[in-house]
Image (cartoon, rainbow, N blue to C red; front, side, top):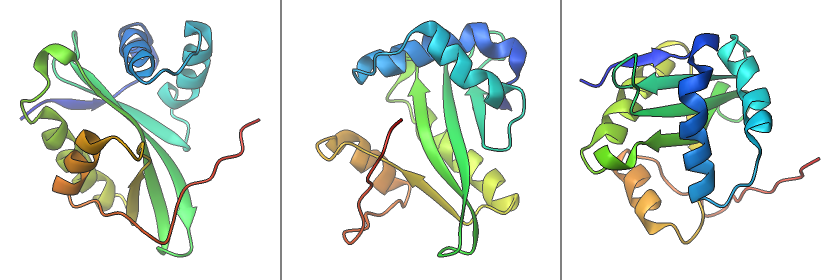
Length: 148
């Protein structure tokens, strides 16, 4: 079982390179200052989300960021997978599946009613990954965004 722990303020330095790698892979251009500013509230215990590191505590091999919301449609607390990152050298070993399975069980135990993920329509590899975890597409829904 891959160790999973809630990240705190002391984890920022090991988390930033992983977030940078994740975002660089997806063409997301942010400065490390912007990334750190977005992470700090979550690492300090914000109720809006959480960051979990996995692997050895001193040298984690990945992270997952969950943001929380509320939905009357599903009857309560919802989560949104903002990022899941597994270090490239250990990908393909089932670690992501193991981590999301364990984390989902814990979040459901804490009252989570639904977990969502936003994917690029052409990203078949990610679609297959989440489908294996029983995520399903909602053909009558699509995500729209207004950024400020």
